[in-house]
Image (cartoon, rainbow, N blue to C red; front, side, top):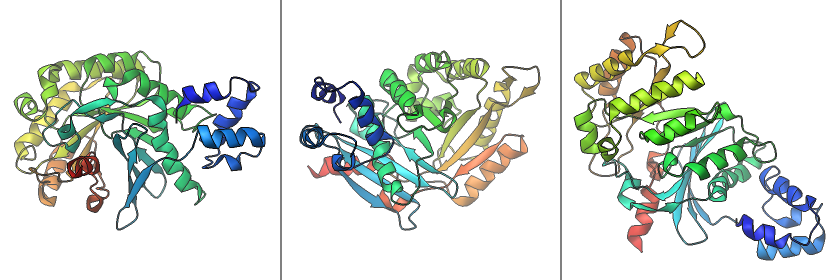
Length: 346
């Protein structure tokens, strides 16, 4: 959706028309302007022709139906991916923030694509809109959004933050700010900026390695944003916001899943403990999210025993641990796999 084009189309219309259209598209989730019966017929016809609501996409539904992955084709022909993850009590959409990614993490399918460009605000919102239209048919809604898809959100900072504000806006999706999460591999400048926003958003750190040498080998971000500096700025974020941080840890067989790796992670986090932002009692302001790897070639997921042993070591150290349910392995659930396959076909 080209919102600049919409502005041009409405230049001779009454000022309230834009608000009506925004409500119809982003709050009532219409798919055709024929359903916007509060608009004049001639305006509806013009909008249908000049401002189409169709989102070009292909859907891939997991065997158990708990996840739906969308391969979305943008107006310039570029492709991005989004995923709907259906839980008993909520519907979460994982959105992309860039076409491809410049971070080059060795285990990430998106990293193999390289970075093409940033997404604009409405390309980000369109991903949520697509799934909200699907859920509307079942009288359900998107209840949370995570920026954990293709790209590094903090390298598209302005567009991502503008999208977050609209996701939270009552005239758009009206999703609570505490139900919106941004995941970063450790962009220090972006974390510092986010801490100043006075926004109760969730922040996740894609850590994956607590050994700096391993992190450099598999995550090039470590060369410019060292782990010690990243953890320091994460501590500042906690002190300013009082928010709990999610530490994401992807389990890679034979690479970062040993007992020694678990001990290193425990030591890193125990040393990281900080005072509460609004009190004197010390308490962990983090929890670890263990993620079983969706294979993308060259790497394998840790086996169940290794994952359980890893979790037990952390738990025995008093560290809160959750294990993310692995969604959609059979639909190429890892970010970038569908886009990468389509690029290879061309």
